[in-house]
Amino acid sequence: MKVGLFCMSRKSKFSYEIKLKAIKKYLNGEASVLSIAKLIGADESTLRHWIHAFKAQGPEALKPHNNNQRYSKEFKLKCVAAYLTGKGSYNSLTHKFCLRSSNQLKQWVIKYNSHQELKDYNPAPEAYMTKIKKTTLEERKQIVEYCKDHEWNYKEAALKFGCSYAQVYNWSKKYREQGFKSLEDRRGRHLKVTKLSETQRLKREVEQLKRENKLKDQQIAFLKKVKELERMCLLDNQSKDK
Image 1 (cartoon, rainbow, N blue to C red):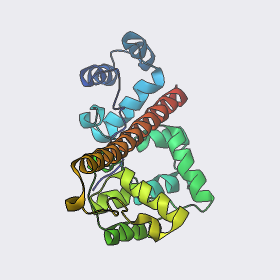
Image 2 (cartoon, one colour; image 1 turned 180 degrees about the horizontal axis):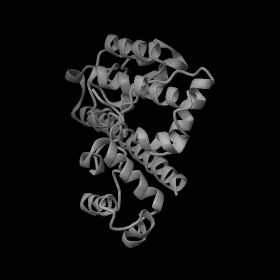
Image 3 (tube, one colour; image 1 turned 180 degrees about the vertical axis):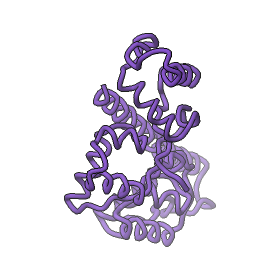
């Protein structure tokens, strides 16, 4: 599977048609990069970025995409190796490999030189949208153990076990603070449902709904934070490209 193929912003103010028309105008020798960029209201560096992407991957590279780019460990190492062996500058390699910005490549090089592992990146938004799953104590233990063995990667654990990101985060947090005993479900331990009065039963149901709604709110909050971080990173990369 190819990765790191698309470098166009998901929220670009320029349509696919405008990008394609601008590039063809330049390639046909009708105008310079600077004059075309001014004509459509884009930065010269942005237009050059489109041109490099088009030459490397064709028209498909100009289309917007719903999710963040996916970069494998192998792809990152390939980019880093190209820089370290003198095959280009940060800017030229950013264009060649169609990355979001030169800063992205710089961060990979810094990590590599400081002996930090370059890992696969998969945005997997479905991890944050998964519905709350009912689990047993043993299942919660298994999920936390898996999360612990994988450097507390909540997103990966959530996807693997089909539960929500918020659930995995909360279970892991409880485990780190109080151990496995904290994962026990203590709801309804005092009286069985059959022995409750109507008022007690309704009260218990209300409390249960409150807990479920609280967990859902936490899940929504996580998703908002992720989207906000993605937006901030996008704006930061765009400002650095100017």
